[in-house]
Amino acid sequence: MRDWNSLKERYLRDELPIRLGNLASNLARIKSRCQNAANGEIIESLLQESKLFIEWTAQDAEIEIAAELVELQIQLACWQYSLAGIWEDAEQRMRVGEEGRIWSEKVLNMSGLLAVD
Image 1 (cartoon, rainbow, N blue to C red):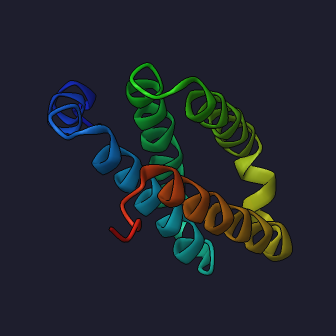
Image 2: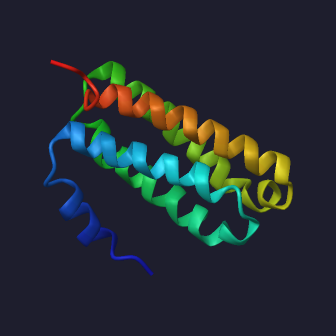
């Protein structure tokens, strides 16, 4: 069982771009972990953690970013709800992984961490 309060406290110490970068990193991990059927519990944990990251971040983001994050949170909840069925089907697993990668890139771009001065 995770200590979500402790994680929240640490997570909120970072500025918004870093928080978005952490969310993007989680989404990238979803992509890499979907390749192995043995990683179901890890994926479930990453989905839950990512939903919480969004909850803790969206309130501090500009409205356009917050709206995208809410859309992502809904997608994560749908995956989490359907995870048992998704996990049994390698093609669906790969599709979730690919969508996770796309969201990861999108969130990383939102963060501004890759911006060149």
